[in-house]
Image 1 (cartoon, rainbow, N blue to C red):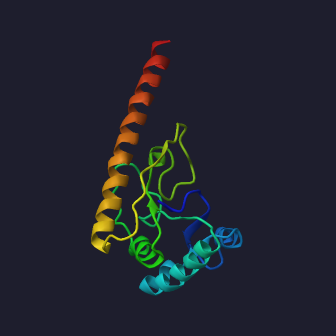
Image 2: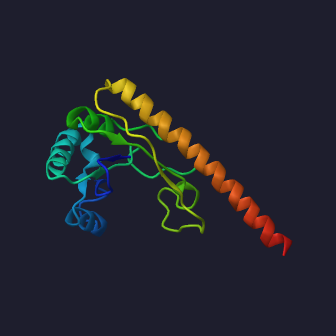
Image 3: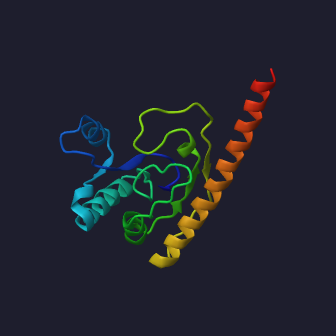
Length: 164
């Protein structure tokens, strides 16, 4: 899911204070979220996102708070609603099939073709509940189609390999 027209800043959860990954993300311009702070993390996240938007920098966020494996459902986190309600920017939902090839908390990736689909924007003005419903519906429906397409292509490829 992204705010703006082009990819840019990411909102990243802070894995550990002493993590090298956290340091790289922060120094690279990501808006870092301290997951341990719970709801208190929303205010600094929104402030950092507002500053990025004022500078014209697009913002990207996984609404579930992390990557999600194929078939798994994660709750959409309140951070995405806070950004939508506070920034008054269009939200561009993005569907991915990457969960087929790169699972949550797995460094190892499987070979395959990752598909990305940018969906029509959700314009500002919806109430929180309507926004969250629409966002999840669009992303989950489009993701299911991308996964089905990938599985169909993978089965055709495997059949061709087995046949030879």
